[in-house]
Length: 435
Image (cartoon, rainbow, N blue to C red; front, side, top):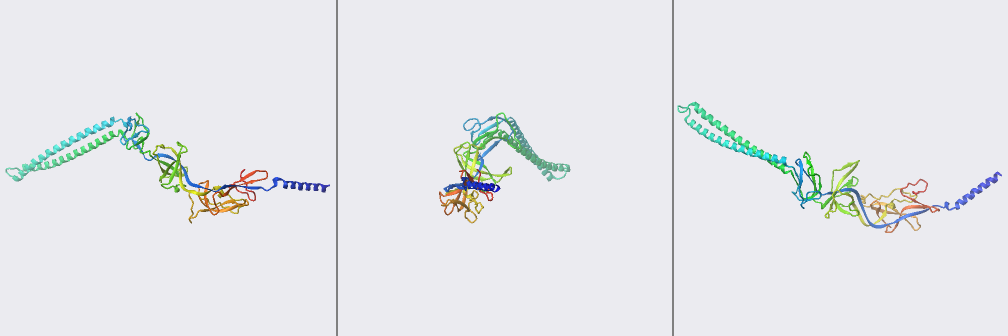
């Protein structure tokens, strides 16, 4: 009885195994390869960054004296100076209350007149002293001829000599007084010039021809000039040429060169591309949250006046480009068949890196399907990459050639699973991708 039960169990297991092996689910999984065609086209390697549109030359007009703003000037059209006003060199921008400075100028002028009068008096005194010296000199000469005698006593002789010597000393004093008076006149003139200059500073004039892009004061506002002159107006010298100040990461700054072509867009004109070129790379780097960036000046033409100051710009620096070359998706260079003996990833090159020291391009491998539908490798030389496509060349590579970019496993139930080249393959197991 026990043997019969065991026999029935064995027969049942055998039948179950036979049915399972004959069932569709027991069939071997079928590989389905996803391919893409080799295309011929253009590839461009770029560096992206953000920046701000700036006027090429900006003049910050300040005040050198303190006082209250009492009026604004007129622009070239006769309107009151305001935002966007066109001004010429010397145009009056604003006026500061000059009552105190006018009084100082008048006082300095009066002091100059007094100094000139003192000079005239000193010069007249000098002439008087010269006359006294001449009289004393004649008396002394007569005394010398007579000498101490019955006609001229010794006391008189000594008196004439002393009078002559005193006259000489007084003449020197008179000359010094004239020099001092002249210095007083020069000092008074300098004081007057200073007072007049301060009075002139009460009229704020435009130092250049340009456009007022910012007015920072109002009538009635008091400006105070200290060590740093207060800013009143910001004038752009020429808005027909603009700059874009771009912050470039230190990892990319080595690929930026003066004269390099640049394209950029601004949100004010969506879909429109503006062009320029690298003008200057500033050496004063800045660090923000441990990220070092350099400011690159991009020069662009703005003859139509559409670009406005301080617009945000999305900038692309053109590092290198190829036209009419064979291109494949980057996934084609990363893909490897299941159980491939080589796990080494091919070099697709960094953006802008295309030649090795030996002068040849870096090497890689792409896979295509042979006549039996099996993967077949093709060695290629890898050139530029834009992060999506890569330039390749090699024997057997032609336009339209299908290359493998992925793999799908289809079972008998019709379910397909994509094998991604980024998903690690477990040892001894099938390399299934994410469902």
